[in-house]
Image 1 (cartoon, rainbow, N blue to C red):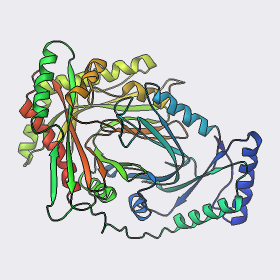
Image 2: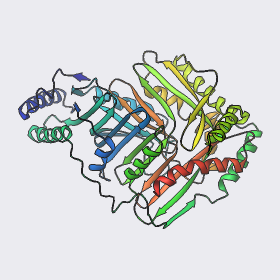
Image 3: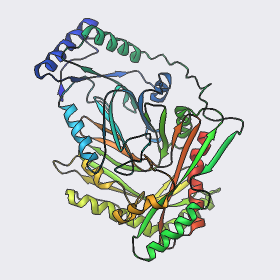
Image 4: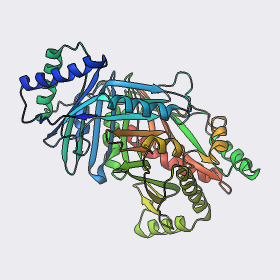
Length: 477
């Protein structure tokens, strides 16, 4: 990526902008290939979700992620570049797309600020191939036309445009100038939720379970028997509830409810540009890379929260001592460490798991940290980690080979990685759990649990019911 020493604030005139674009067009003409031009500006404090609400278009791609407890939020929409991949090589193909685009990128402004410069937003399906008719491909990345991010250090707006060798510079300059003025003093327009209400408000809702009410219990029973036969040690099985509401469901209104209810989770949305959005409040980070340091975590083993402090502490203590949950957690941790080793990563982690306490559930959690060796990229690590035993099973290949025969629905993006890569090679991906696919009046809501030796169908069913409740409450609020 080429970073030019041009301050877009100090040179904030239409004439200076056009002169800059002349340079970009000349660079594109040199080799006949377009240039991605990225302009980053520090702006007054904005709420990225409110910005996305104000300009929401169902026919455009968008990405949103926020972790309120950490004080950051990120919104991006409208693709200037997009890429899709499928099959076992999808992670490598996406990395090649990122590298190719960055090799043809010219950036100016607050590129070094948190979330400054061009970003690539992506989502991967759980499996390498998706079933026919699914709303999302196996892998999709896009570069947004605009991006807004808020951190404790301030707010940054990024405008991206594609400059062709024969670009109309007057039209491009006018478009960028309008965006510059808008984000310097953003005028929020109230979103119209009247036709796309988040909930029905009148209870006129139909909820059915894919495969029927006993499908999951039967699957757990069969899975435990297969574990006893030595076919695998653990398998993660999910349920899908299909909700039909009386009024259309607006994904961003639902998202606002999720970020308020679950400030310690990743509230997220990834839209396909055809009216369908994959949303959720995930408790699980798959990985984060910043300044050459990798952060990931083992998250497995669950218990409900208590109604009183005493009950909560008792449930937490029981979880920390539960042999079944500790074994499940250890399987996840050992798999993560085993898959990082061939990349040359030396991992550090606590000897005993701690607790991640969320609003309605608590989990066993072990953070893992490692320095990335030279030449190892974020997507290299992602391809090794996904799917972890927390969402797939162990051994991974043996367990995942049976998931489709147990589940009566297509997973799509459920339990797949969702996140971004920045121009420095850093980025963050969450695991798409505690999630739903929103499609006008309908939504598919997902919840799963890890099945190991000793798992009991009724208890696993109750655990997934608890996980369902967060999304169902937000959808019907």
